[in-house]
Amino acid sequence: MKQIFGIFTALAAAGLIVVMAQMIREGLFPWPASMNFNNKKEVAAWMSNLPNRIFIIIAISHGVAAFSAGLISSLVAGSHRVKTGLVAVCILIYIIIMYLFENHFPLWFKVTDITTIIVMGGIGITTGSARYVS
Image (cartoon, rainbow, N blue to C red):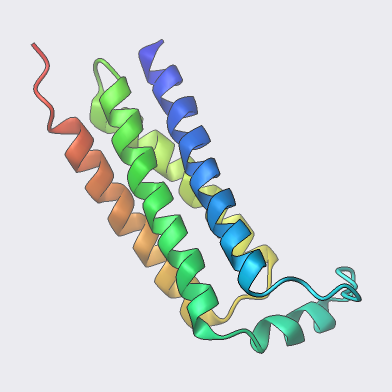
């Protein structure tokens, strides 16, 4: 039961981190009021004009979210900490990959973001599961 609670808690925390970063991105570069989200060419053209720092903010938020998901799920789980952390991080990776390929992000960002979440998730799992439980 602790493992399931750990996974849900970790995903909730990761979701909050990503939402806060999206709010920062929205404050820096809000969507145009006349944007038609059904027109994929218009959305792709707008996203291609965004500066790289916006993508870096998103990548950092995904990395911090993956780290926290691995850390929190590993810390909360009483036993099978590594497995619980892997499940939480893999669910998060799946969600982020679906998000990346649904939207029109540049290829360099997709590769960088996926690499970042895998590395940071692994660091979070390692850190959380290294705790000694007596």
